[in-house]
Image (cartoon, rainbow, N blue to C red):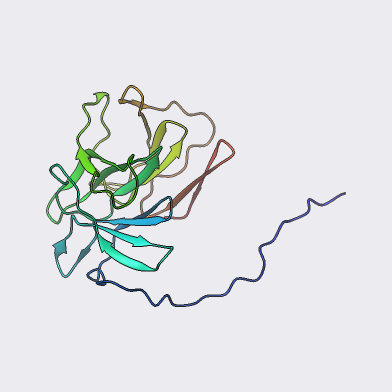
Length: 199
């Protein structure tokens, strides 16, 4: 029996980045998303405080920057999800300290990094909006956002889809053995397959 060859990465090496600029406040439950050469960090919490700031890390010059964004930002939250589709970051759900959320915000970065033209928008959606939740995952599949699992009074195992062309929410029909309800798992989309692990 012929074994499949495994392509391995060269041996990686960790190093601590000596970054410039003002360090973000200590936090957990935030999201970190790449847009070109920039890492955008949104939200998170620490010491019973929930943040709604958007912070940039420029991977070219290893500098931290606060991002100025037009429009009304989301409320502070943690354990939400953020997914990049095109040049738009879609932020969904989370926990704001006293309430689970199921709102949807878009951070539009279509004009590029540090151009003072980022803006928050709240898209009008149709269809079946997911229940409020946190500790879920969101994955980009072309123009669609796949939301799986999470916690809202109990563990979830539904697969909700947002079509970002029509902004319609719907429940994705599934076959086969459906994963057990879970939260704080991971989900990675590869070659049209969504790999869900742990939780």
